[in-house]
Image 1: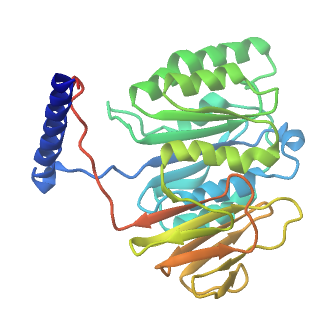
Image 2: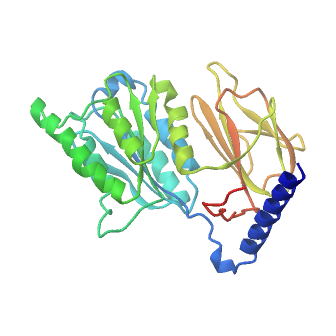
Image 3: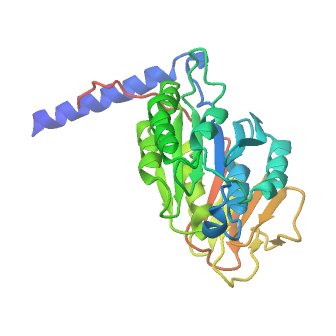
Length: 328
């Protein structure tokens, strides 16, 4: 027993010593994680008239674009027979986010075909010259099969081409593909392969009403964020928080969202200060508060499942990894 305890004590001292050594390295040796590169590709084929009759792809796209951190790279494409760059791939700033809010209204269901291969190629047309894109995340939504022609043999050949040419090119660049299948008619086999081969997530949205939640799941893989817990209808913000974003899903028929700051002052979508940005959609509210007061914030009702509060704080810590072959 004594020998075992002594060994554990030695291991603990070794680990602490290693971490202190890493902490003592020069500042240049510590690198904060790079901001992500998020590329969103949305199917606008005619079948979406049935699978997304209310165009719920629009608020879903607005939601995730609002949550992509400024300083990241991002772009938005739509596709059917042809591919459209709806919002140019460039650094994310307030102007980029405003552009997405306006451009999202162009998401429709009028295209004749479902050219998944061309969409992936257009969204990755800078993958050349041996460059790698390890922090690039492609989010692809489709409700159909590969469909570029009325000739079934051409569609089969195109599907093979995606798997033998397009996918290996994306994989070699180190990018990750996350896929969302909407409807039972989606080519789940293809979408799952694209995700699994690149280390991504393959998700099925059983209805268009689930799109915002499902898009959020995929974005979480690309842009992990620090959260504070919502307890009942309150959450606590401490002095280290520079900004928080509350994503509050509402159940059907729920009243309009109201947020009370620690002093009891009421904030709503219609009435709030300049430090507050409030996006209100049919199923959720997205509220960003800069320089928030420290203390307990209160919601007027218990939020629906999936709601969360993420924070930006001034305590960004980079932990050095332990050696891969360390045994305790």
